[in-house]
Image: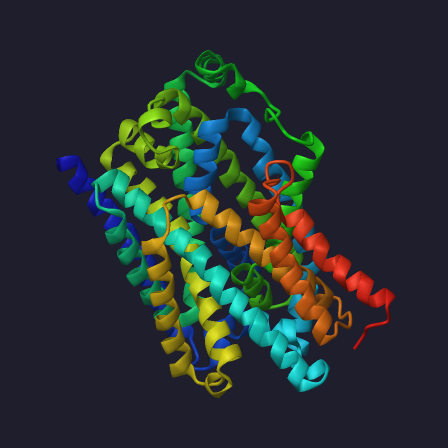
Length: 473
């Protein structure tokens, strides 16, 4: 009981520190929609990088990746490795131009950027904006719900609270962040949370590795549990290793369809600082991924019963309770909670931007209505989280793929200022969604190649066929 009290005290102290940062950020705000949605395009590259890393890694890293590594062993390493390569390529090819073109076209949201209404007949751009906004609200909202589930899993594992209570607490904190200063509060708190995420993961990894007896003993013990855990290549890949690896690499490229990350590129203070932001993000992201991978492996040795009588996605909080003193367990829980909330608040802001700026033109320049939209979206996300199953990895991967396949190809073309007509743009988005869903649920081929590859390829193929036929704006 005493240990739980100290865990709670430490956890609450870290949450209060995030809240203080968010409230302080409000002293820098301006009561305009551009400031609420893009921090007046004046975010320095370090904050951009840390925030993008925090909002991209989220509960997926703390809960999902650790759970997958626990189950699959060393062969799971190719998911974060391939993903990191794809993510870096995407930032290199698109984010600098995204910053430049979004300002040139006066686009405050990803949906308005995709529509780019000032570049063609207004009704055409407007319809693209509306359709992409609906996609964002539906699937980014589902993605945000997975973060609330991730946060609730940590609270459940350590305090025994039911999932619903943890989800509600997470939603309340998200609203507090968003209301305090919009995207600026989100970016500032993300940056503090990013440092906490890295520190907490590495503390647990080092302690758990020592408990296993070092790298050599970890390998021996994993091999004793199940020899497949020490295989570097996943077993039973339907089409072999290269298509599998390529599929996850393209999953990293799918960042070009993720509004909550794209807006960080749109908000940086100068396109010339994008290279620095990209490199900082890459380094910190790989530090996180390496520690999460290691924790998944050590948890399989130290907590073998999770495989049969528990939830592998709860490896991190359970390992914390097993190995760490109360204060550090509070730190770990705060790190997990921060990872989830840093993504959820960004996603809810992106969804509320799509609602208030893109679907309801009368609210486009109303600071008050932007905040009302945030409340509405949070309520929707809360309902999804309460009704969803508890697989964080599954929810995140599904939502990421739909957003990447529907919005990614069109965004790349917009970034490079390629003409795309209304019928072609709509066909690209719908085709991407249909192909990714059919590939995953209909053909059941995601274990061979993750569905983002065929889904995004289908979008570009639609554009290519249209161009061959001379269908241009």
